[in-house]
Length: 422
Ligand SMILES: Nc1nc2c(ncn2[C@@H]2O[C@H](COP(=O)(O)OP(=O)(O)OP(=O)(O)O)[C@@H](O)[C@H]2O)c(=O)[nH]1
Ligand SMILES: [Mg+2]
Image (cartoon, rainbow, N blue to C red; front, top):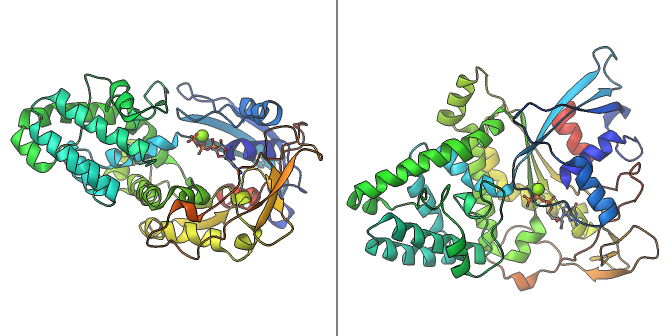
C-alpha cells in the first residue's frame, strides 16, 4: 500500500497534497520498462483495487519492481530527469536474511536455534524439537519434526519463519490458516519435499554427519536459488525503507516484537555483512551501495493524535531498532518517521479517540463512521505486556474514486524527500 500510494502521489503530483522542501515540484512522471527478469509491481491494479473495489492490495508473494522517471523543478530541465527504481519484496522472505549471511548450514542452524531460546514459545518448541531430533535417524523424521516447530510458531503469530517457503512457497502460494497438523502435512521446510533442511544442533550434526551433509546440500541450493537472488537486489539498494507496524505488535504481544526486531537486525546484517555484501558487490564490480535507511512507523492513522504529537510512535520505532541502526556504518544516514500511506481517521470528540469508517466502501461524507477509544502508546517497550491491554480500531481509509485525487497520507512527502531528493 505504501508504494502504491507513493507512486500515485508522484504521478498525480500536486504541491498542496505532497509538499516538498523549498517548494520543489515534480512533473512528467513516467514509468520505465523493466529489465527482462524483473516482475512488475502492479501499481495500477492495486490503485484500482483500493479506490474502486474497496480491497487492500493483494499480499506480496514475490519480489517486484517499478522503475520511473520524472522532472524536478530544482534541476535544470535538460539535466532535470531523475530515475528511480523501487523494489517491493514479501516481508516473509526477510526472515531468510540469516541464510544470506551464513554461507554454511551449520552456523545458520546455530543462529536460528539460538534465537528460538529467547522466549517461552520458542523454548517450548525447541525442547520438543531436540527430543524429536534425538530420536530421528533419517531426513524425513528430522524434517517432519522441524515442520512441527514452524507450524507451531505460525500458530503463535511469530513472523520469524525460516526457510520462509514454509509460509510463502517459491511459486507464491501462502500457507492456509489451518491447524498445526495440517500445516505440517501441507508445507515443506525447503525447496520441495525432497530438499528440506531442518537446522540440526551441533551435537546432532556430529552424531549424524551424513544427514548433516545432505541438509547442507539442500541449504546451499535454497540459498542460491531463493535467498541470494533477492538479497543481491537488496545489497545493491541505496535506500532501505523498513516499515514497522507498532499497533500490530502491541496487539500481538512481546513475542512478535522480539521476532520482528530480530528480523530487522538480521536484515541489516545481511545488507552490511562484510563477507556477504562485500563479496557480492565485488562480484558486481560495485562499491558499497547503502546510503540511507528510513525506519517508518506505518499506520500512524490508527494511533491517537496525542501520541503523534508527543513523539511516542516514532520513539517506539526508534528504541526497537536502535541496535540495528548502530550496526550501520556511520556513512549511512538514518531517519525515523511516523507515516501512513493513507488516512483512515480523524480525531474524535475526546482525547484518545478517533473517528473512521467501519466498513469498506466509497469515500462519501454520509458513510457510517464511528468513534473509537484508542489506547495511549507506552512510553517505551515494556518488559512484558498482554495483548488485552491495547485497543486500536480497524478503519477503512478515505480513498477518492477519482484517480486524479490521491488519498490523504501522513509524511509520505517527507519520507520521499529523504529517500529520493538527496
Ligand atoms: N490504517 C491503515 N492500514 C493500512 C495502511 N497501509 C496498509 N494497511 C493495512 O495493512 C495491511 C497490509 O498492508 P500491505 O501494504 O499489504 O503490507 P505489506 O507490508 O505489503 O504486507 P505483505 O505484502 O503481506 O508483506 C493492509 O491489508 C491494510 O489492512 C495504512 O496506511 N493505514
Ligand atoms: Mg506487500
